[in-house]
Length: 118
Image (cartoon, rainbow, N blue to C red):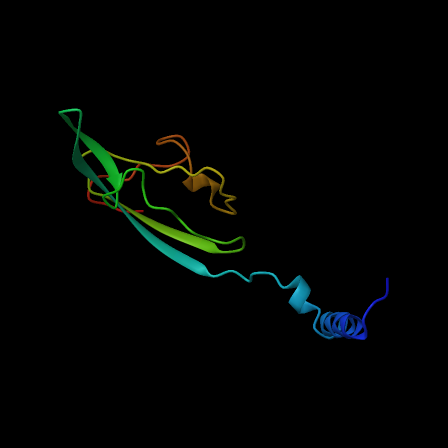
């Protein structure tokens, strides 16, 4: 079973391109800064003829999806519109130099007061 000259030429050109431009193979995402604003509000929902007030993020429960890529910088502004203090907590996020801003209220961070943002 032989190899056609065309397939050998295509392989040669592909290897040559990767040798000439190695960043095409090893290119990494340089990262960008992504900004999100989370407005925390109460919303009345009715399930099985029972109405209840729940905490939502931008009117959604569960909250909105955050889309990032490895290497991105994420800036989230949380605005508290509910009558109670709140705090936010992240799972699965590697936080560099900001671990003090993640965790339970009064332990690793102060809560966000009503009408304020963080």
